[in-house]
Length: 193
Image 1 (cartoon, one colour):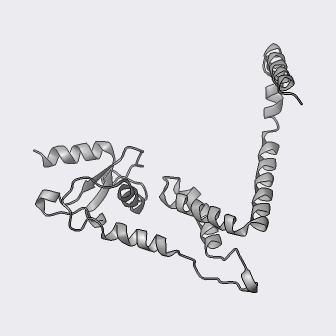
Image 2: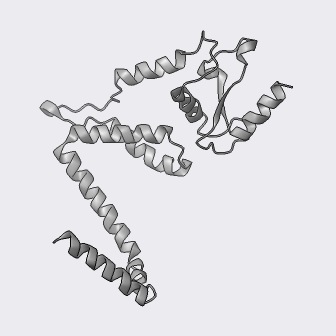
Image 3: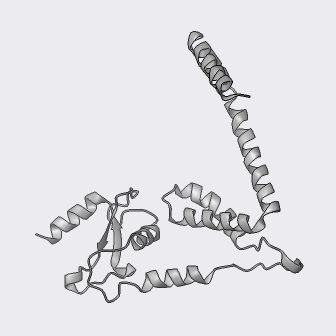
């Protein structure tokens, strides 16, 4: 079908919908439940096909999804529902070469090295800046909650030193806490008095 015809049909549908005071769109919305069911079925079918055709790619997708869930600020209930599924699938070996199955967690050396580097970094430095990776790590350890008021952290949260650098503190993750902007401003004002 030519592109011009598609544009013409869409414009005709919109004009007819406006003329009938939204009757056609309301009719489409009345089947919302069925659209959602079809969407879930389609997603499950595509995931099944992906796993069957390219198991290594599916393993990467599940691993990356699990990493996103660990560090993104999402609702705790949603995380509790989805995490066991992704944790289970990330511990399975998708590729069954030579009919061997391994049921132990597959953790790459890069992940272990990266975590060790984050945990050990900042023990000697006196530089005031903290990397974005370390900020996200500290916030994720606090389940994306402010250390002071326990409110959900937004995108512009601050990371503060528990013991100030000039008082012998360090940039180590154990000396850092994530605070919302309001609590960080209050703490800084009180310390500078």
